[in-house]
Image: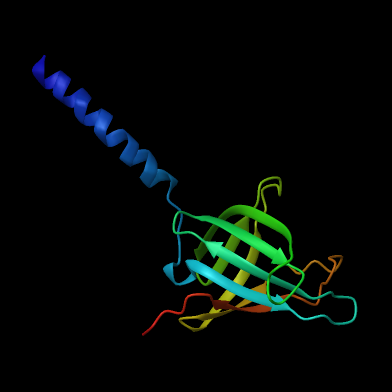
Length: 141
């Protein structure tokens, strides 16, 4: 009887840890943090800057701005992210089952180049399939 109570107690303690491990997603720690980038205005494309915060728990927040100083926020998107084999996946609520997919290349610890894998030619600015983001708080080597 005592062994059964002890087993039940151990299961109660370990079950949250098991479910947490089952929910973990692959995260590239090099991408965690706050990053900034921008798309310059060109024919058919308007200027836009953004800040993205990728959290170590797989959540992200992107804030879009209409100015380089990032004082006029125009929208914000939240969702989940994960990475595998130099590919970044970003899923937002209501986007269906297909995440946005980017190949990424770490230029250095504080600079990443992203290439959109699935360029949407009907998008507002289909020419913006590649972007370079810079870490807001620089990491030292």
